[in-house]
View 1 (cartoon, rainbow, N blue to C red):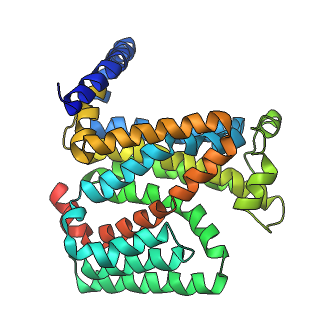
View 2: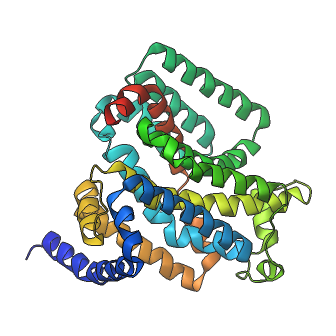
View 3: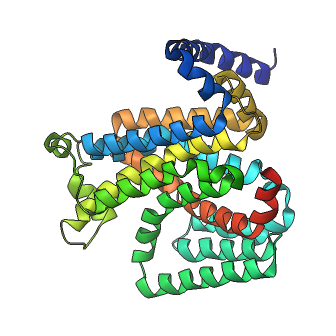
Amino acid sequence: MNPASQFRASAAALLTPLDRLRWLLLKLLGPLAKPLVRRRELRVMAAGCAVVGFSLAATLLSPFWLLALGPVVLGVPHLVADVRYLVLRQGLHRHRDLWLPVGVPLLLAGTSQFSMTSGLTACAAMALLASGTWARKMIALLFIAALMAAAWVVGDAAALVFAHAHNFIAVMLWWCWRPRSRQRQQALVPLLFLAASVMLVMGWLAPWARGFTWQPAGLGPGYHLSFLAPGIAEPWALRLVLLFAFAQSVHYGVWLRLIPEDDRSQETPRTFRASARALTADVGTPLMVFVILLSLGISLWAAFDLTAARENYLRMALFHGYLELTAATWLFVERPARLEAAA
């Protein structure tokens, strides 16, 4: 048996118990399971509400553990989903005309101190090169120019603002991903997300008392306030940290649950084994093996030094926010033809 076949067989053996467990859970639901299995829009809405609800509950129970463990556990899989759905599934990697003007700035956005300038340059190049009307191209370019001007005015704080904003980009991308005929049926998910965000910012929701003290060593309020809300007065600083914890968790859920469900053509859910086969077909066996080893490596590192593992993951993942913004630009310019064809 060649290595690729052996890898697939091992993956199937590991995922078979999960498929059996899901079958048992659906059986326990009885008549409620049938519409969830048959109707994608109902299933996605239920999953989206569950993502928002779990993220809010985790934020209120222990926000600092959520901030610490979220990137370590879900970070690498969510990066793979970014590349898979924004690049590979769209075939953008085959457009050689995008490699230099879009790909190189995105690479620089994750490896240089000029990340904002590089990321917005990639967005501008995508706006010009995407297939769409010149009216949409000009709207996108004007918006990007406004972002560049704002980034120049606020200076170093621009990266921090973008770090907060990029969690909301995922929800926007998911919304744009959907055919127009189904968007109205799923409005509950972004409405719940926005309502919870407002309640956290306004201080109408706050973690329970132990949620402030139950925290990993070195990754408590002081650490996160210094990175996510430096120089901001209380109570707004802590509220911004709580908002980030909540929105980042939803961000992961969107990429790992909602977009995969909406992207595929099959109306009924896949088994875990079928999902693994589809993922391997999209990204290739060598990259899958590398991703699994990287995820395990970061998790093992976190067991010995959680702070270092988390910080180095975040440093490695710098590019992905700009990739999402570039994809949002592409979706805006090409949206009519793409979504009307899917409707």
